[in-house]
Image 1 (cartoon, chains in turn brown, blue):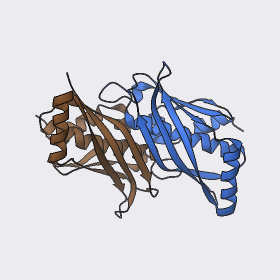
Image 2 (tube, rainbow over the protein chains, first blue to last red):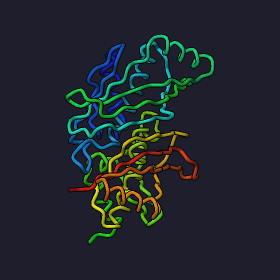
Image 3 (cartoon, one colour):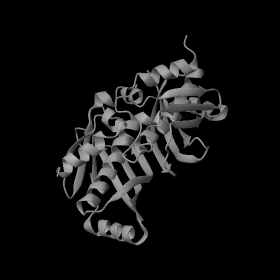
Amino acid sequence: MPNPVERLQTLLDAMPPVLAQGVRVLHLDAQVLRLGAPLALNVNDKACAFGGSLASLLTLAAWGALESALHARGIQADVYIADSELRYLAPLYGDLVAEAPVPDAEAIEALIGKLAERGRGGIVMEASARNAEGQLVTSLRGRYAAVAKR
Amino acid sequence: MPNPVERLQTLLDAMPPVLAQGVRVLHLDAQVLRLGAPLALNVNDKACAFGGSLASLLTLAAWGALESALHARGIQADVYIADSELRYLAPLYGDLVAEAPVPDAEAIEALIGKLAERGRGGIVMEASARNAEGQLVTSLRGRYAAVAKR
């Protein structure tokens, strides 16, 4: 039985575009998921982090935080992004690090209730990327849908 | 002097994460830019297009439509995404195709005026992805900033 970090890393590595971005699970506990990716694999024409790579990493961080929280409770569900708002606040000239809070017990229990009742449910997630100095460079707020596996 | 399609393809290929996604310029004229990317390089854990890859392709399509329109008018500017809203309406089980309207002459002239006056300017852009049947699967609406090169 892999630990939660190894399990999530295996899920990420199985997606070719995520593998190409060099995404690593830096930290996962009951409060937060942190993902990293090297700038060299995610750089744009202006020598800073490509907006699409930041969008991808933040989308994944929130996805992973939710997927892992459901899995930890023994729930078999596919998690999809439904919509998102991204804000790019400053260029990032270093490696990418994205953090997403794991939903609290109340939010997860509410989602699991919807899954049990209707086979699907939605939840709002957030994620953010900061530079090495701790300055917020990109934020995501998105709705995710969980769909029970048959 | 490369033609506009070759020039944009060269810009895209110079970005490692975009090269890894296999992004191709399918069409570019004064009205629209169309980009494509194979599903195999952009697939997720659910055998459909990864949301992060769609976010990336739509972000690039709107960026490329704007960057190309400025270049066609001889304007030297860096184009950055400032914020975006993405809607994922349906899973996509085929190759990715994203389309972005090129800003019309009035919008581009207004942006060029701001660049001349203040060295930078903003513009709202849109992009969308449809499946092979023409159904809208993902849409983006985003603000982009153009910054005059020194």
